[in-house]
Length: 252
Image (spheres, rainbow, N blue to C red):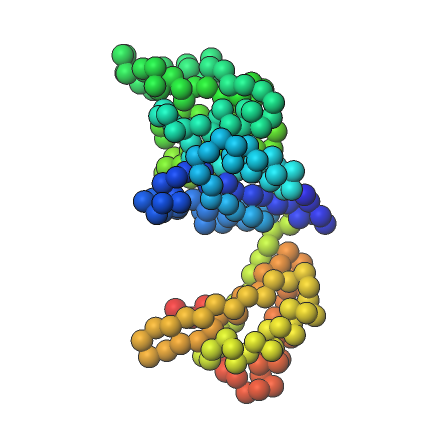
């Protein structure tokens, strides 16, 4: 949970289609970026199958470790959309046909199109509140600290944007980047020394390769801006002491 104004989240991607490679996830990076903008750090992400007990176990584990849990997938109209029922069981309740969800879906579909299969999308756990879906209307829901969203990226992204104002973030993490035109192994000692000296700053190295050029972007991330800038100065000093040319920012 939160420590020193650090607010954390976990993301659970639910779907056999992701694990099989048939569908590529496009939601994690979007969610992490949008949450990061309001001071919520994604601390963990998992991809799990459409298996009820796995969903139950994962939701219960992560909801006790972080401030916010988000899930994507498994709330559609078909037989393998079992997320709502699994999460209801995780919190000791059952699903029911939410009258507000029914009303939203009845307005969305033309007369005669709101069939029995689509009524499944109106079922949420008892005690849950609805999350608005501005794209296809079928709502998600929130129960405890778990926010259940659609898996289709266009829909999921719109639901996140609707949800963000209701979330409370902590300190926003900022980053600083410098680039060197050498491989990361050459500067591993310097990066390690800075990481050891500034434990609250995340020091990462990201090699790049392009025709005629290669090198490493060193990215420092942290919410303590004074310490972040001090760590940046420390790594610059170590590189300059070795006459290593430094570029500011990512190498494009």
